Length: 347
Image 1: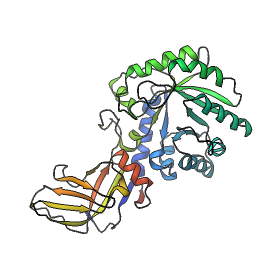
Image 2 (image 1 turned 180 degrees about the vertical axis):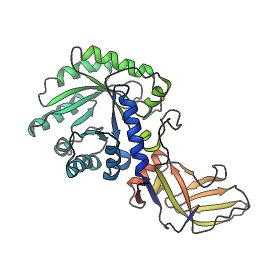
Image 3 (image 1 turned 90 degrees about the vertical axis):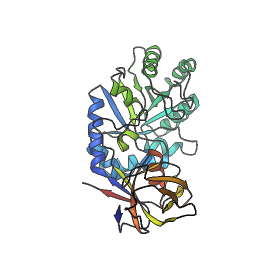
Image 4 (image 1 turned 135 degrees about the vertical axis):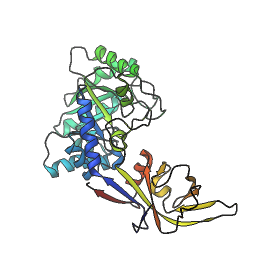
């Protein structure tokens, strides 16, 4: 346990670890002929982490929301960086369209209507932007069926303001289906069928695809992997094990003990000053104790209650600060919450 940190929850960000993750994964994937697209939505495309990724060699970045994703272009312009590609993973609404086309270079769409709306605005702004057509391969979230794809290609290839970059898929985002070799092979076959004799690429998945890569089962293709969680926390999203070569200690949550006392049934209850307002419903793992020693019982908006089952010689007192490793969803909430202080550190 650490002491005298702050009564408010704090998130410490190890920028050196993030740069090393970016450098390793960028080189690792590039050696397979695949480019790395860093998903930045978890940290709201914050410039300090974008800096860390850029130092690690990443040049393509994706967010799912305009309000945070436009930070990518603003950051690149302020730093006078060349060769940065900013991507929007979720199609913009009608109200967002003008600003979205101004700030983003690549869009991921699953309807002809969205593609045409982007093309119309790009023409108005005298821009050419890239479109990735998302294909349904099992997650049942969004994407063209193969039967719909021919009409989409025919309708959108006529638009002079867009470049059909290729096709992509989402797996293990909604239903937590395992990303399989067959998912990628399906995309490869579809690409050959609908983009025959043309330059096409495949956006072949997210952090779950690293599980295949680790087993040597990821098919060879030209394109990208969209990686978010693995860059941040070091694990793939299938086994949730630390991927060889990546660091898992880039983020540490600090929260203060408010109360520690025996309750009616004799067990010690420890109340920590962090709740759903800070970390949502995402899980947090204690770093100062074994997981079976400090077990979460319940979480309210402002507090999390743990049961202490550790050694009797260890005393947890009010005012002590406990460290936690956040899960992806706890990290997402913590970064979005103004109630959690952010401390950026270079080792």
